[in-house]
Structures are given as structure tokens and as C-alpha cells.
Amino acid sequence: MGQEKRIQSDRQAVIFDTNINHVLVNGAGIALSKLKRAKSFNARLYYYAEIGVYLEVSLSRGAGITDETRDLLSGLHNQATHIHMQQNKNTKLTR
Image (cartoon, rainbow, N blue to C red; front, side, top):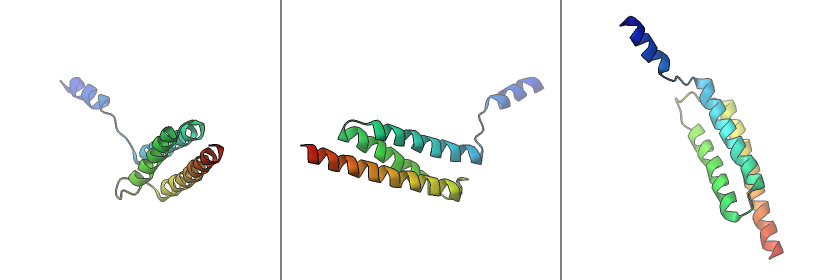
């Protein structure tokens, strides 16, 4: 019986504060790299919005998200904004 309880508790995933920070930054980084490769406006808009969601989640207080993570996400969002806007401008110029 005691071993059965231990096995159940071993199966439960535990996310530590540092893990959520890594998940947010890595997720936004992946979305940014996909944004850079996106060929259509809709795809760029999707990845831009995804980065915005990561930034919005980082603003939650009491979730163990560090100020460093918020700063990194803000920087990634700024990069995404410039890339998205520049691509939109380039698309309009080629039409």
C-alpha cells in the first residue's frame, strides 16, 4: 500500500518556478523564428499574436514569473513587432 502511494505521487508532474520561465521564453523564441520564416500575412499575424500571448501571461503576478523573463519577452515582442511591420511594408511595396 505504501509503495502504491509513492508510485502515484511519482507520476504527478511538478512544474517549478524556473520551468514556467523557460517555457514562456522558449515558446516565444520558437514563435519568433516561425514569424521570421512565415510567407503569408495570416501566418505572421498568428505568430505575432502567439508572442503577445506569452507576454500577456508573463504579466501574471504570483505565478513565479521573474522580471528577467518579462524583460526577455518584452524584447522578443518588440523584435516581432518590427519584423511584422517591416514585412507588411515590404509586401505593400511589391504589389
